[in-house]
Image (cartoon, rainbow, N blue to C red; front, top):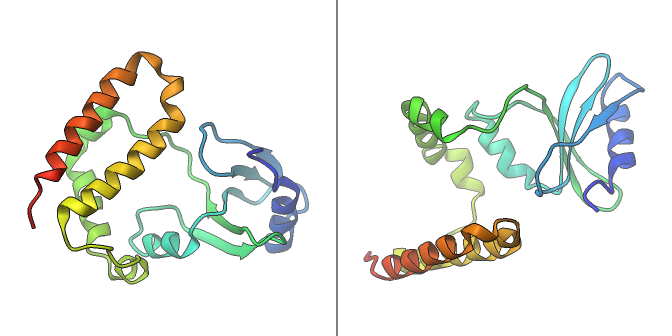
Length: 172
């Protein structure tokens, strides 16, 4: 169940913000447990079970909404509350129209010392080994979603196979 912490989240918000009444809505998708919560004074986005330190490091770049508070729920799950900002996921057209902005954002993340400090060390210095591991992670995620897009299965699996062969040829 994707929203098992709703009551705990409401208690957490009541404790950390000056509002006793919160209205919840739920983002679409199949990701981790998340909530939109609204009170008289606040509109927030709540994430459960996220790697809070990574988000805090990324927040130093100014590329994500501010983190208002973090904590741990009674069952040990992390909770992170961010300022909610109206928006939508970028489309391919957005990427094309604002390529320089996206490139600048990626560069900012890649050069952020706070992010580097919290990331685990690479398990190899060989690009091909790292690339194959990343591809394995992608394939694991793909297996969860491929039944949702049966018309694309052949294309995606062919592309993964082609990528695997190209990644094996990486040097360095």
